[in-house]
Amino acid sequence: MIAARTTRMAQDLTNPKGQDLKELSLMSTEKAAAMTASANAVAASAGAIGQRLSRVAMDEGAIAMRAAASLAEARTPVEAATAQFRYALGWWGRATAQAVTLNTELMRAQAEAIAPIHKTATANARRLRKKT
Image (cartoon, rainbow, N blue to C red; front, side):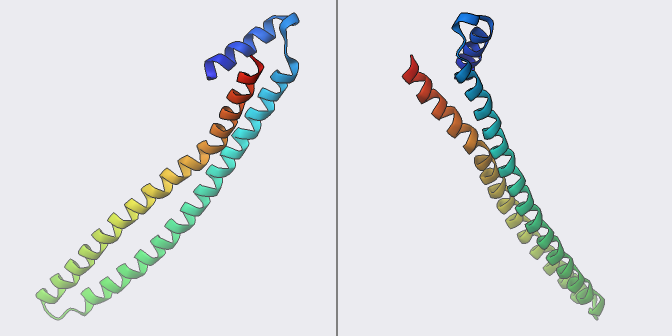
């Protein structure tokens, strides 16, 4: 569809008698509106993801402090190793869960960014089919 619209725009711009100025103007404003909506979706998603990651980092810092305290309070090498193991195992589980969550959020952000562009493109295709 992009190639067809680009060809149509080029033909209209180079053929003064065949110009559909209303359609050319509409194409430009629709593209700008779709791109603005897409950029707004990306900004909103990035902000929400950033806030969540900040909270996770603060929580992980608190967990690391408690683990360090447990390690410092250990009375034997076995207690120290146990404290280290608990922290490492817990960290691995949290890190894995965060990776899955982040991947899901990024996929959702991508879909939200593409949605206004797709909506505009499909509406344009329907409108242009009616004209021909």
